[in-house]
Structure formats: C-alpha cells, structure tokens
Image (cartoon, rainbow, N blue to C red; front, side, top):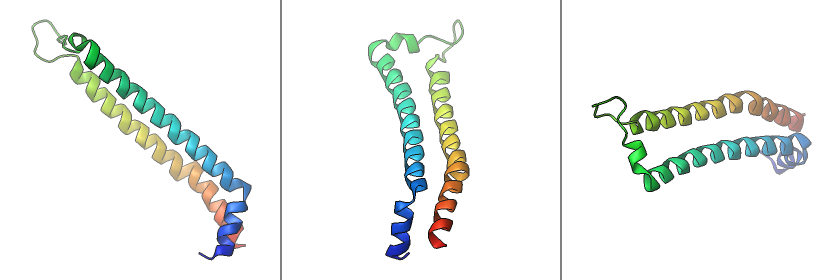
Length: 103
C-alpha cells in the first residue's frame, strides 16, 4: 500500500470511529473476563470451602466444576460475540474506509 493511500485512510474520520469502537468493545470484554476470573480466584483464595460444596448430598462432584465450565463457556461465547461484531460492523466500516481511500 502506498503512503498516499495510507495517509488518506489515516485522515478519514471513519478510521478514528473504527479504532474507537473496536477498542472500547475489546476493553469492555477484557474487563468482564478479568473481573469474572479475578472474582473466581478470590473465592478460591479466601473461601475455598464454598467451591468444595458437593452438587448433591453425598456426591463427589463440587459446585466448582459447573462454575468453572460455565466460565469457560461464557468466555468462548464472548469471543464469538467479538468475532461476529468484527466480521459485521467493523469489517463494514473498514471496507468503506478502504473504498474511499482508493477512489
């Protein structure tokens, strides 16, 4: 890509919009993941017996298993949400920016 096209892309107000939207969305998802993970680790550190509670009376499986699995599932779903938005809204804005820069 030539430096002239790069400069047109960089000066396009839609570029700043794209960078801002993508950054805010990524940082929001990051904060959610870190918050949930940090809370889980704090429970493990300061109240491990809460997670050692059996799911059913006399059972060996504890509530930590479904909570951990739920966290992993939630994080995968959030990744999918990011991918969906990136392939939709963010790619549409990106395509418009490139099209305007080439014209």
